[in-house]
Image (cartoon, rainbow, N blue to C red):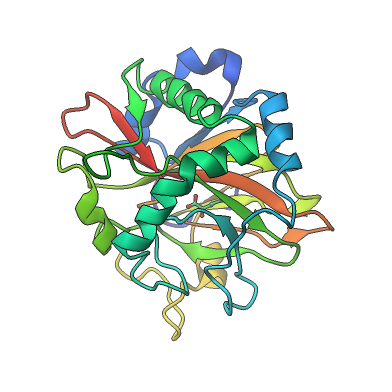
Amino acid sequence: MATSVEGHPLVFQDLDVEHIDEASTALEAIYEARAAGLVVRGAFPPELVAAAVAHLGDDAPWTSPNRGLAGGEIRNIGDAATPTFTHLRGPPTEVYKRSVELHAERTAAVFGDADAATHRLQHLLSRLFGGRPASPPAFDATSSWAAFNFRALDPGQQIYAHHDSHFGLGVYERLDAALDRTTLLSFFLTLQAPEGGGELIVYGAWGSDPGVPMLPTRFLDTAAIEQRYDRAVVTLRAGDLVVFDSGRHVHRVTPVEGQRARLTCGGFLTLASDRSRVAFWS
Ligand SMILES: O=C(O)CCC(=O)C(=O)O
């Protein structure tokens, strides 16, 4: 951790999946900004993770929504409800709907089962919210939001500093009005860790802070943020699940080093305003 100069507290819990019931208030604590995030080690069974890695080779149906963003290209299977270089205001609703329609088939092709990963996420997120239900919210009368998408960061690529403030994007008109939009949390599961780099860094800076350092390009000024704010560096192994307050905290993923791509699957989550359930989606 860097020396704290200014910024918000960075409580980041790190626990083994066997102790998950000791974190039954974790999601509320993150949502209410009493903690920045947590890691659940060994959250997914190794055989499910290995099946996914075996099916996420170059012949999988990857797309490159950030093509042209030097050093920041990320490959995806399935859309994320975020701005990308291809869709600066996020995927249009009809584009996202295609991801919804293909989600079960794509997930079965990767994990060898259409539901196993979603059920595991439902179980884990529910445990982190005192046993209350966790599921993807309704997208329309017959389908739910896609539960997660797959991401690959190739050697040399990174995710630049950002915060995930996406509720204003058009596709979120489809999000259940009973869900809290105060902040957005991110979750992701590491399927394949890179040989080096690819760490998640979460800063004590919030995207909403007045004076958070920006470059003339409107990208966040990572060098200035590094100097000014505390940070949590999260090193993830295959099978680890991370949940953090990506809606408020500036964060990034450092450049991947070595020969191997960094593979993750994940999305976003929020709590119902009445705190009765958790909703997660890509
Ligand atoms: O590493 C990932 O899959 C995503 C990291 C990130 O920027 C996020 O979850 O918001």
